[in-house]
Amino acid sequence: MIGRLRGTLVEVDEVLALIDVSGVGYEVELTSAARSQLPAPGEPLRLCTQLIVREDAQLLFGFADAAERELFRLLIRVSGVGPKMAMAMLSGMTAADFQQAVASDDVTRLTRLPGVGRKTAQRLVVELRDKLGELPLLASQRSESTPVSHPRQQVADAESALIALGYRPADASRAVAAVFDAGLPTNELVRLALKSLAPVE
Image (tube, one colour):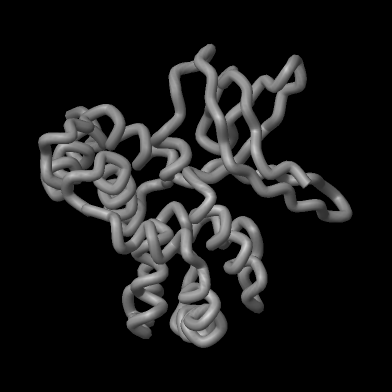
């Protein structure tokens, strides 16, 4: 099992980041939150990861922190939720916000996630309600989060809003990064990001 990588970021595209670890290049698919924390190419980084082995492939996924990875592990145990869907869900909502939605039976909020219909949302609530409450990392993240003042939370919220509007996670991440300013409220970040994404007339 590959649970963590420490190396140098080589390059990143819309889907994968290539990370050099002692001469070995690992291709890692990232959540939006993990992508927003990437350093510049050539800079060192540490990343929580999860390896998924299938008959036809070995897939490595990267996360912003251990709490996000733990949620991924729970999501892929839910019937009908595979690794790709779990990654899309994590890119559409922070781990703490997801825990809050499940705890409050907020099915409508969950259906706003990419690929999640009402039946899947109901299944997530039923299967994860008790399990999420047992995860201290997620509980701590939720109690300590400050949505407006925490830069990572601002970025994730702005990206989630753009994804909900139909933009691809990679495009949303780039647009928010281009206009990010810790002093701006999330709604202003979204407005500026939308402006940067608008086609030039």
